Image 1 (tube, each protein chain N blue to C red):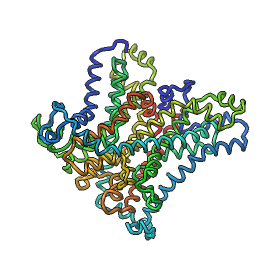
Image 2: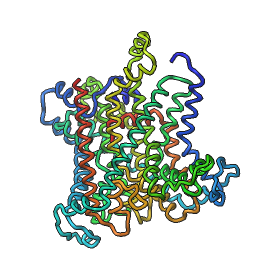
Image 3: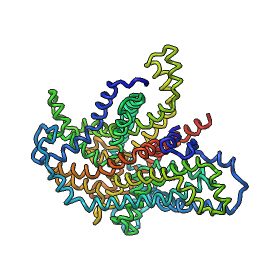
Image 4: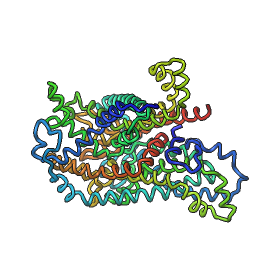
Length: 328
Length: 271
């Protein structure tokens, strides 16, 4: 349902709603002419650059990454190319490291709290902007700004706003009689600070998708409900929310997969610190490989592969859900 | 929905103002004198605006802006060149195994950038491609290519078959049909793809900070990052650079808002 709205906004010339890219094949197969080997080769020819690209720039880096995690790479062996094979030793090191439980809990908190707030605020705003009022389209477009800014820009702005001594946030807190909060430098608040910034970053995405979802609920449903005397509150919980469920599920899943791999925001604001206070799995991996003067690629690759596994599990759920909705 | 109450507009303005406050703050700080930034209660308005931050930013960051522009455009070209023909094969030429390829592209979008960065680093070390603009263009394009193929093929699947068949009947080759019939129809998709490929490459931090750390040509994101590391006293210059780095996004939002919205909703099949 979300991709059909692409056609609407993208003004497809024929206005037809195309199938979702996840599974456009069955429809085409049905229409197919007699199979000719010439056209098969033509198709392969057109796809060849992509296939080569995926092999060289996706499969090979991923393969290198697995290889990194199964060997004991040091800076020396990295250049010389003669690391010792250690099997799953690096994975064992990662799982037993002191940082592991912290990073795992932080990752869970960072992703779940972020997407919960992003979704709730995004849905509230989508409902608000659903009614057509003056300037609604302009204001909704302005909401996209945070999403389009380079992450380094928004993260460093947040870092300066949350600065202990000169930040505007503390200035407001103190104006209301609060005490100075060391947002980014205290282990108690560092994770909260990066979550706040990340929620802000994710609101536009949630707003736009959920708004597109709301547009697809036919107005007659609400008119009928209003005639039956349903209050706005009942309309929301009995109609909007259930009908929006497929869109919501996709938004939340994509939000999860996307938030899982966030490095920039946390790294720029706190570098995962102080200590490990705001360390997530992705940031940990980045820190091991590139964040210190001593690159340690093997454990970093092991953490990275663990992240891929988590993302894939949820990715499969995503694909499954899309398939089942297409059937229904 | 029939009446258009003003209070809703007012409330909407308030929401937008709250949401955009950090953006306002960035502009405010960029115009504030460095010594005023050290006060414990920052000033809410640039009462006495100074452009020293912008002077410093332009004198130091101009080369990085050029580098980022080049990388962004290179990434657009590479992405379109690979994605459009592939989508044509998938959506119109009925590529065998297309379903699996689509699936692979969905999976590809789930791979964390940090993992890709490590893989690329390990490869680039051997090939001597670290700190090279070309290396960064290729790495940045990995974010955009799967998205672009899926976006293109969704659109192309909706092109009426009769158009394609008519072109073939008239004796056009597969390549001719692609360049003369299909691609012109895909103009809007191309704009959306180009817009996002450019913005993602322009905004990239992870690949820049891993593959181009000590290069002669560093992109603007890394310029800002090194700025933060080097002189923490000159926040007006940092924020001025940030404002300049945000300009492409702002310009594109104004002139191409429709394509931005199209891309975000396609984001539901992206990451």
